[in-house]
Image (cartoon, rainbow over all chains, first blue to last red; front, side, top):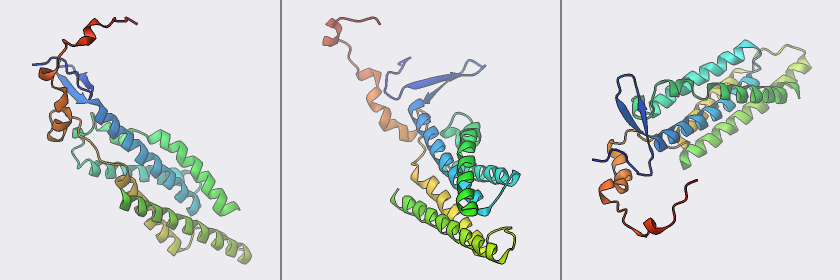
Length: 120
Length: 101
C-alpha cells in the first residue's frame, strides 16, 4: 500500500537499466560493510607482523599480503554462507573492499616487525 | 564473542613468542657468523598456527552479517513498527511552527 516507507531502517532504492527498483535495508548493509572493514584491517595487521617475523623482503611480502587477503575473502564468503547477494549489493564488496587501505597497514606493521625482530 | 576473543589473544601470544624466538635465533646466527635465510621450522609452524587462530578470531568476533532484503524472514520483526497503516498524523505536532531550513 505504501509507496514510501518511513521506517527507521531507511530503505535505499537502487535501480538498474530495466527500470526495476530494488529496495535494500541500508542500515544492515552498512553493518555488513563495517564487519568486512574491521576483519580486513585486523588481518592485514597480522599479515604485516608475520611478514616481518619471517624476514620477507620485496615482492614476497606483497605476495603474502594478497594471499592472506584472498583467504580472508573466502572466509568472509563462508561467513555469508556463500549466498553473498543476501548480505551485499554486489559480489565485489567482499573481494575488493578494504584491500588498499589494508595494504597501508600491512606495510606499516611489516616494517615495524622486521625492525624489531631482525635489526634490534 | 568471548571464545573468539580468547582465541585471538592466544594467536597474538603465539606471534609474539615466534618473534622472540626468531630474534634469539638471529643472535645465535650472528655468533656463528652464518646467514639468516628463514626462521627454524618450529617457528614457522607456530606462525602458521597463530595466523589460523587470528583468522578465526577475525571472523568470529566481528559479529554476524544481517540480511539486506526488507522482506527476508529475520528482518520482519525489526520492520514491524514501521507499518504505515498504524501511523497517525493528526497529533499536536501539526500546530507547531514549521521551520523551513
